[in-house]
Image 1 (spheres, rainbow over the protein chains, first blue to last red):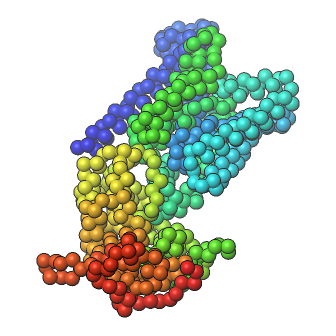
Image 2 (image 1 turned 30 degrees about the vertical axis):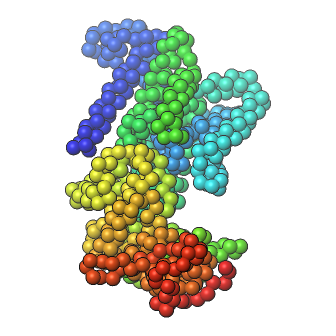
Length: 351
Length: 288
């Protein structure tokens, strides 16, 4: 009886998430400096249906297909990547407060991306290699290195206590920010401007190349995280218990580290560091759907996509026709949300 | 048969086990006692396959444990560890179901029946849908015991199964110690081999047929609980004398209860003076 009710509420939650996601996607397509009406959009995409033609329609069509659509898809993809990475990292550390941003992994990825942008500028001009690719590679190498190092250090320092983990995160963030500052210092004026905007994080520069690369990476990584769902559940019981239950913890941890690092790296390389998504989304959804990864992973993917897309729509609306950087909104919403969750949690569980 | 053969383990600076051998056959109920740091839990983790011995080997059904597929091993050997770091709000039922995560059994009617049976046995039926994080220490321990029992529950009755339990009575009140005791006896009758590591000698003397006394990484004595615990060597190890009580039973059967005398001998002995002969002393401790 009880489990039937739970199943029903899970289904209701899934429907709610999907409805929210689609309405957000629709508004993301139509909202912006050039706001588009619904019937305009329809007649621009299906020109034959209304019988209307003209340059205005062509413009609407261009804006929809080459600006709004890739941007919407990019925001969705970044949300999926960051929320999945957050979920996997929280399982890896058995800690609901682990996150790429808090642990300094985002900063490391940003540092890697900035290093390739500033240190290897000539790669931009190599034909057939999209500029995005080497930036993503730089971000990936730094993110993966940081996760591996963090995991080592936090294991050595007597298990994975919250305090150790957060202190390590502070240290990594500080070191990363310092080095990032150094790169800003040596960058040329044009690089400086690009880097500054990039470190604020925004999906405004979405192109089909970036969006397609991100979704291609997601196509490989999301199934990998999905395959880890039972193993991650077992890992939550501790490495010893996971072993007793018939898992080898080492390959699981390796797969979790690499998939999380790659997810963070492609997201950061595509849009810059976006704070709090990987922390807030799984943390909040775990309260709603429970910690079982068979449910939490898909819920986080949808929830993360909805969260980032919603924040991007807000970023475009608040100071229209200008727009705020995406990270300003996610941090502005995520910070207070985290605070509320923490206060509730500490009251309930004595954190 | 789950066998540890001349197992050594440790680091150059601090060896932990010096050639320990242990045999756990089907239906055996064995106990392992010793002081803190004597190597009991290390031996248990080696028998579980989690730690690799530096010398010697652990053999399950005639085949080295390390060669078993993790899944097949998990079906046969269930382990209750002393520490449970779970801090995520799984429901109690979900925690028990995690027992089968590696076998990808999700929720068949048979699995549900097993879970319900185990939850009822440990009086967790009413808590089945409560988050684990809201449970008390004893309720958490019962949940994990139910999970470990579910792991080796009869899925393939022809396979022999073994349980390695590290401090199973932790946080349990007397009522559930009794439930656990009866469950373990029942499982042993069904042919499950059980090894219990505990400091709770009263529970141990009721539960197991044979006790191994460990000290400094060696097994010093083996035999029936009253014999081993009342031997001079156990008094030397623990610094405490043990009393053997034989409660009068209406069914006429004999039952022994071993109780540590925590008064350090300031009060006169009342009953059952030491009975060293029934314990088989295997060796002497080198470092006391």
